[in-house]
Length: 191
Image (cartoon, rainbow, N blue to C red; front, side, top):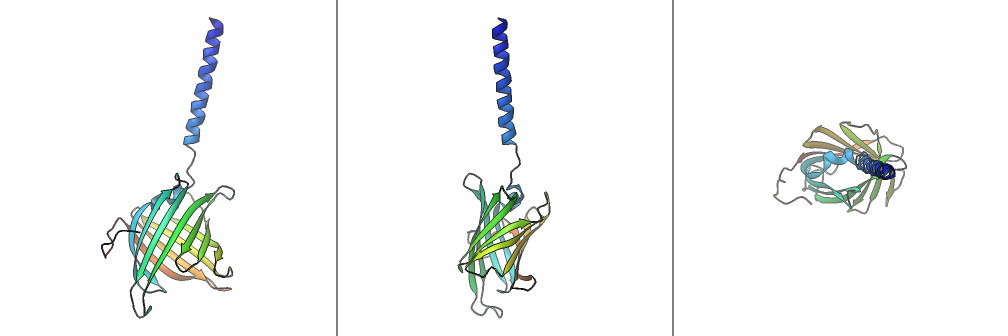
């Protein structure tokens, strides 16, 4: 009986340890957590080099929550700053680089550019996220770009996109102000 009790006790401790380890694995920090506030459908207005326009955007987890995907459509009607107007689309994918312990953003633009950004100023709970370019496809790597996301409230964010030509400082290219879940002005669904 004593041997059976000892064996059952050992098995019970092993099971408790396994359960504890499984629970610890489930509760480890989510490296994509800083992006959670972006999840959902957004509409907004944009101004800058392409003129004044309207933007629809969507963020969502993909591939078993390993990545956050962004889809974007910006519509700039014909205006003095942009005589013919334009529709800009891009697809973004956020991932977590374990080796560098930072978020990475890759954006694929309708114009053929592919931008790779790395997170800078990683501060837990910060009211902004900042990404700076690492490389470009189909554009000289002597250019630099920066994406800044500011969060004045849980249901809005402001995105500032800056560019720096070779040897020059960053200048604002566009600034967009988004609101969560607001119907787009044209009544069309988010991308």
